Image (cartoon, rainbow, N blue to C red; front, side):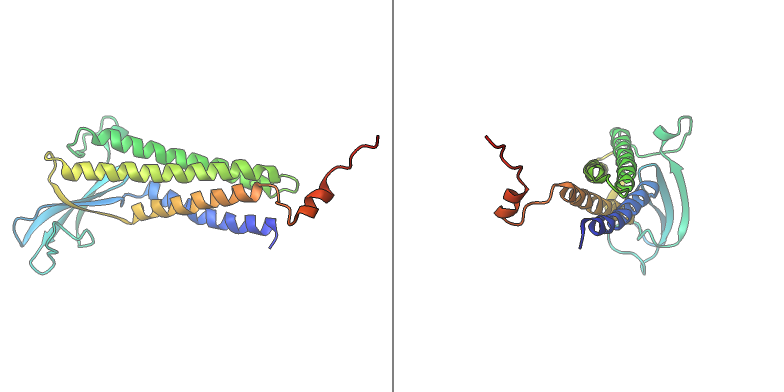
Length: 226
């Protein structure tokens, strides 16, 4: 398998990683939160959120569908109301989490995710340029951009994880149970595909190692005659 074929295969893997990361950024199923359920046959309010907005869902809980942990599961039918976070929509009076540090965590996770998207765009441009004959040198910056995109993705995931942890541990919120959703899984998958593919491109951009010592000797420039 030649070098160009390996680059094309890596590019298809990168497409999967970029699609996963983009899906994670634009969707709001990073985490699912539920309050304590004190009685059956009543309505409780669970929530799921992403980088940009929070969705609250009124779910009717009966003894049949109660899971013993909290309000939910979120897949149960109910009336859902989604609002963008207040710090992203100035002037909007929508309620958000009552934790003071939530704003900083959410803005940080969103900003880092945007950096990841920007690195993906730069990496894609460099990779497309490398397909042109004689532009193999562009593989190295492409690999670096995709590796940085993967690192930004995992940092955004960790910031979001710490955010959820603080909300659950805080006495100022009603949430007692949480789980991570499919958007969170997409971000983790995006990190794996982007980072590993970026490293692959960096390896492919390196000069080919000699197969044996004689090969390097044959490639050496002849010594000048005296």
